[in-house]
Amino acid sequence: MIILKLIRESFLFALDALRQNKLRTFLSLTGVTIGIFTIIAVFSAVDTLKNNLQKSVNKLGSNSIYVQKWPWVGGNDFPWWKYMQWPDPKLREFDALQKRSQTALAISYEINIDNRIVKYKSNTVEGAQIDAASQDHDKTWNFDFEDGRYFTELESKSGSPVVVIGHDIATDLFPDGGAVGKELKIMGRKVNVIGVFKKEGKDMLGISSDKEILMPLNFAKNVIDVQSGNYGPQIVVRGKPGISDVEVESEVRGIMRSVRRLRPGVEDNFSLNKTTLLSNQLDIVFGILNKVGGFIGIFSILVGGFGIANIMFVSVKERTNIIGIQKSLGSKNYFILLQFLIESIVLCLMGGLIGLAMVYGATAAVKAATGLAVVLDIANIIRGISYSVIIGMLSGIIPAYFAARLDPVEAIRSN
Image (cartoon, rainbow, N blue to C red; front, side, top):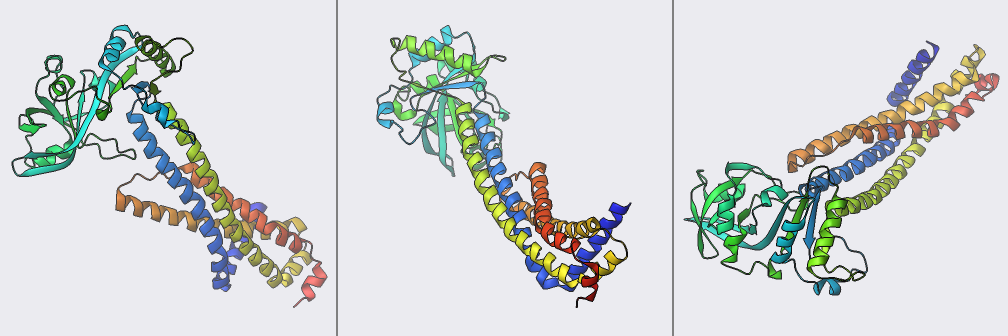
């Protein structure tokens, strides 16, 4: 009860200080408020960026291996001239992986043909991404249908003139609906729309099927050279459930080296990319951003802490008479010390709560303006409030110590 009473009295003293010295208190609390706002806002921004990037990475599949010419991750000494000489993945390698892999759930050969203008009567879509893939593309990638269906095995093998289109293309070309069953002209050939992908929205890596036109690989063979490096060919291998990406990668590497007849000790002339490479890079980058953001925030809140310390020294001076009376009536040193220490913590918490309210306001504004899902993690909120308490203790401990050490007689006689 004594502690609760002490906290109550300290809180009332803090409010009294706010009322009597509004401008001084406002200027001092501004530093703490900005510091807490900076800490929580920076950490939330980093978490939001990381969360959205990780969602994009997860679309690629956590158990998928991408056989490509170029690696996803490079460094300062990136040997691009070496990778330029490497061959692109070929159909014979795709066939070998299909026949020999024991760990793969599905394997697909995929190319990106071009970004084209697509028309239907008077309606036009610019920047349509035309892709071609083998039958198992629906097993190596995750997507849902708004309408229609995927290619049948017969359509894929025979190279039927059929396509699945993205939501944006369907909306722009067929505003009245009913895209399935319509006929488009792509690359000089007439094709039938058999399906529409569900709306995804563009992610941080630009991965989206909203403007995609997907056709069977064997249909594209009749129009272009699907093994040409101009179309960025890749082989995607998705592992079976329960089999790690390391096992899948090891098997794929062995089959690829065998098909390309690479002797032991000779370096691979292909890249095996997987999402963990990107995730690890993200962890490194965002680890650095967290440290930089934390440093900026702590520096800001320390500046605010000096302002709070200034308030507390002034408060001790203004209430020296009261301190002397309290001590003459039997108040112990620890009571005086805790009284001013709690007052300092309360002031810092006020600044912290104002900063937190500002973060909530900024979060709501960003979400309303951009539709971006902002991550305001409870851990960051607790971290910010904890920093407020710590700074309050550090700012108030010295003034509180001086107040507790005052001589009651001298304190009562002071003006």
